[in-house]
Image (cartoon, rainbow, N blue to C red; front, side, top):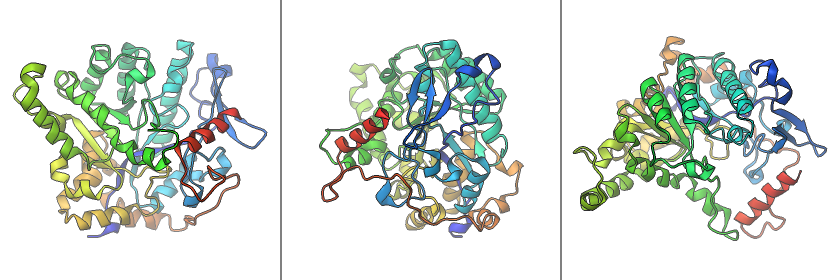
Length: 435
């Protein structure tokens, strides 16, 4: 067995929404108020919705560019690979990377749909959100049902409406929704209240996975403006530990026995120590903190409910049984700067080989766990022999994989002799907003 024999399902990629997204699914009543793409005088593209500009048309969709050009750009459709937003091209890009299937988080709506939650007209916000979901489920995923795991967005402002949308999506075959790592960061009650109970009950009943992506709360977190931006990039995945602790000690996992929550792009190497620490805390402190796990350890409850996800994590793969082999799923993160495209099979195989993984463990981490958690069966549509990395690559042998410099790229600082700081990135983002 080798890299070409892997069957890869990525549970964390991203779609850059095409300009035609709302043409088919938004009711006529709202057509004049639909989000729209605008071309600015400098050639940048932005979305505009509810009278407000939204700049992240393709934020960090840098796949295929020289690493020297990475940053908060690109800012227009001409600066990104067509596969980021065009469905047939995306299939070609997936084939070239040997990836069978993909779950795609949104771009301009925000990772958990917060853009729609900020709409003051709730009726409009709900109509646009449902149109987005219908486009994503019916068009983006439904055209190639063996290649995509659908992911819905939610009306965060109303837990009962969230529950209704979870059930509507489940009837359409969508069993994953995106939620936030920090509800209070968006002005909503925390995990530790009963505010979200209608939503969690619906997910529990429908077998719907709650996906929590890093950065879906307060966004990028900087220790200081003069700290190298590498600090933020290093800590971003690990920072999901705060949401993990919130979840584990909240009543959610104990109240809803069938609920499953994915920590998207959070990595897995930190999990063994986290679980060890949680068990230690419970053993030493539960008598006065009044935490009751029904005779189980916190780590047992975690492994019953939490889906862990990794891109490149050799430490985590080596410690896969301490993480929980039945909880681990793999990610590609196309088209963002952490992606392993177009060498995902090779990069993953190097980790697998170094960790001396069994064939059973490989199958679980690469596709079987994802299929089970997300109620997804690509083998209904194509035989397993045609799902391997090698077979998929043979279907698209002519995809241009060359690295290309892109017009309009600018380094974040004019001084290449010093490290880029968090302040430089904030300034770059501010300049995009000023446009």
